[in-house]
Length: 168
Image (cartoon, rainbow, N blue to C red; front, side, top):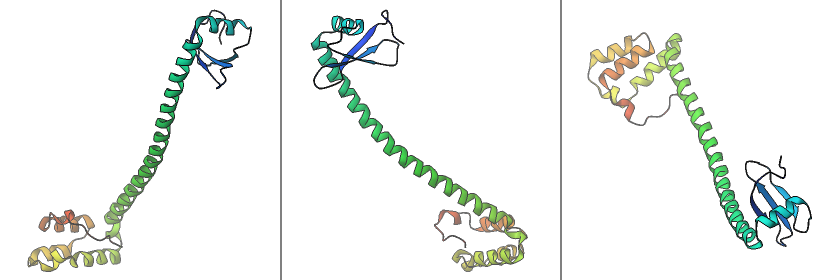
């Protein structure tokens, strides 16, 4: 709250008619509006400390800064909305990746699903074209998905670098 000892740091016009002053105090967050015609101690102190030219100049600077801040705020809001959308997409993608990993780690618990998974691996062109019978036998004999993928990686370490279609 302000009092007679409060120091005025700035005064700007609040209206185009220059009849209403916005008085800003040092170290006090709230500004006060006073009529230019007011006989209050505050209006008199503001008019004594700041000339009309000072208030005109301060008003131009104030509204220039306010316009810049408004533009920056609008950019922030637009970018924030984009960021929120990006973050939600990223979280969804991470969830999908974790779900796929969980599925791969647990697929060997279901014999039918694990057999289908092995079949999909044998449908890969690189596996079809391979003449390494021992490696293919190891793929067939694998008891877990990690063992199966380890054997697959053993012969085809760069397989993951090529784009593939998702497993249904």
